[in-house]
Amino acid sequence: MATLIGKIRFIAGALALAFLIAIAAPASPASAQVNPTASAVKEQQLLNQLQGGVISGRVSIPDQKSANLIHPAGREWRRFHEVTLVWLGGIVIVGMIALLVIFFLWRGRIPIEGGRSGRKILRFTGFERFVHWLTATCFVLLGITGLNITFGKRLLLPIMDAHAFSEWSEFAKFVHNYISFGFTVGVLLMFLMWVGQNFPTAADAEWIKRGGGILSKKGGDHPPAWKFNAGQKMLYWLVTLGSIAMIVSGFILMFPFYGGLNIGNMELAQVFHGVVAMLFVAMILAHIYLGTVGMEGAFEAMGEGTVDENWAKAHHPLWAKEEAARGPRGHEPLVTPAE
Amino acid sequence: MARMKFLCDADRCIECNACVTACKNENEVPWGINRRRVVTLNDGKPGERSVSMACMHCTDAPCAAVCPVNCFYTTADAVVLHSKDLCIGCGYCFYACPFGAPQYPKVGNFGSRGKMDKCTFCAGGPEADGSKEEFEKYGSNRLAEGKLPLCAEMCSTKSLLAGDGDVIAQIYKERVTKRGYGSGAWGWQTAYRESIAI
Image 1: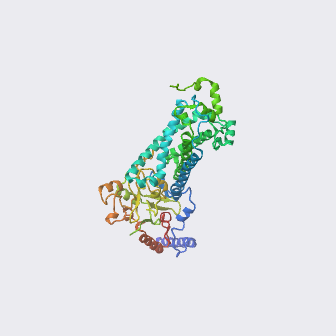
Image 2: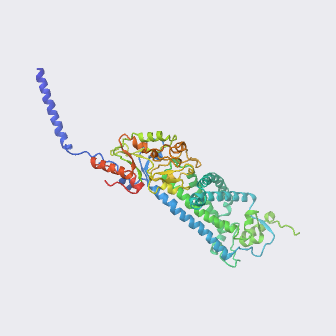
Image 3: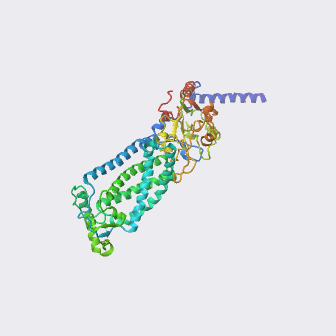
């Protein structure tokens, strides 16, 4: 009895096995070689469909930046930083200096029309001057230390000891980072204290139409202007917008990868920071020229805070009239008595 | 002279991270710095592959090109090294590097990242070979002792290869021919502008 059950069991088992093999057989041809890479990820395929410029995966270490395996966009950024930015900066800065020299040779120092009257008008209060020079000092320091990053190794390193240049560059980097806070405060105050006088007026259209009168070789073309002429208003708004661009991109660069920023964002911030910086420096060079050697009587507005009445009448006629009508505030004769 | 390269055979890498550990131990790398790491692509999906990645010692290295103080140099073996005495920790090499190799010891507040650290191909730095100063700044200089980088030397599946580019390319080609498949030399196209024809 036991042997019969055993035989039945064996036959049933054999039948079941044969049935299973018969079912499974068509699915796996016995001789086919398994290719474990049939569905494997391929580098070229990933490079072709780059997601955000990087091939990234999973890593078991906390630093998630290291999950980026290959980031070919780094080469694009390199091209920008080593070629595009250098040429752009060189052209706009050297170009602006050349333009200013040519302009100076052609036009010379613009004199005060009718000479000095000896009567002075208060143009900028002590607070206004403080804010201007705070911003200006920070800008110059930021400009020099910033340009060092792009041009230092090209202009300074060949004439300096490598270690001395490294020390200077590290110092410059820290100056750049910390001075940015002073610049931010200065720009914010400057925006607030002058915003009211910098909205476009009807006089500005006339001023722009006559190119500010700057191109008349003989002088004497003085289009209307209030406290700030249309050119100064353009400078004001460009400084405001440029500073916002510099501050936002600069703070991103100073706090890298915060708030979920990835490497592409960081590179973009640097591109933005670099391009705006070069244009900004070139623009401020023109501003410095006009405020110093370019025009007689202009520097004292920001230096001592007062301007000569004849200068005010020529360059800011509407403002001069307004100040005269207002009475003694700034109009009291500050003239030093004759000896 | 040899042209030193790394090659990770992704079909052999088992993501054991022993190369990462070996590197940290051999070079006494500071806490938080990973000169080498293993990245798993398509994790948990069919066709998942792991690649061990560090500095690839690129031809015409982007890090060296963007460095504002020119602290990088290339050795006779084509290993890309840098001087920590000259580095100012600006972080630009990390933006330019296609492989995320440069590491910084500090969290980057106010630009105080500290001196950059990266894989040296176990070839130390500018200081005298095998000196104490060299070891403290850059780690081991195995190349000067006639040895290859430890990560590759102790790879249990011999997935990670280090050595002369022609030699390791030949080894990889033979493997691919013999087993009939290979997912390619990861990063070579980007680092050396050439790949291994399979």
